[in-house]
Image (cartoon, rainbow, N blue to C red):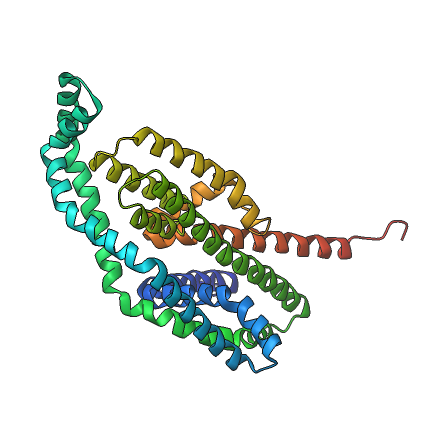
Length: 355
């Protein structure tokens, strides 16, 4: 009698195959992430490519080329309109950061802000003591984030590959889907895979476009409101707020903290109004704008989304935070389609009454 029967061997093989797959994903995480972002970038451009292909009555390759040229022209135009102002304010903010750092490190910013707002001497001294007592924790957190930014900048070559790889995704998207379906012999499994891929295609396409719309809306609101309120470096802060909108939940919080910190550090006189604007805009964005833009295609409960974002951040940092919501939405699609298939099979196998 064999020590290992067929069932045990199958279980061991499954465990080894899963372990090998996880090891491969971990070792090849950088190129895999580049491929994932290239796929999302392709989903962003897909509607424009399809529309141009119909309008021009041309090949898919020609439509992709026209899309890239149009996108570069649009980016160049936007850069000419707002780029110089954002770059100028960003440079000035960067140059003033050492002075602001010294004020925070010494705690002297407490006296500067306190005198401008008419605070009492004991209040200023208490704030100065609080800042000095917690500066090490703050600086450690800032250094950690700076290290992450440096790491991202060091991987800039990988980022250049994203629009290049997106061309191949746009060109061979349908063939790739058909190739996956052809690997399955069972027609029911092939139909289930086609339905899942169709749902995933619709969800990812909508999710990526919605993120771009939300970032553009948020950047516009930040820029206009902060400029009207005469907040220092409003253009640079507005651009930063729009970019951080791409990171669900965590990005807007970081943007709000940065805006408040810069306003406080530069002794802006209406800090309460800035805080009120940030709270109002966050509520409007989360409960009015975002549901209308996202619609019902990314149906993830807010509590589940928050848990997913926190878990994704612990597992994979910023990348995990960004992919948490679409991964949870994809898991929901798999679960719903699988349950639907099981119900159909159960109803088919159920005995007919009276037979």
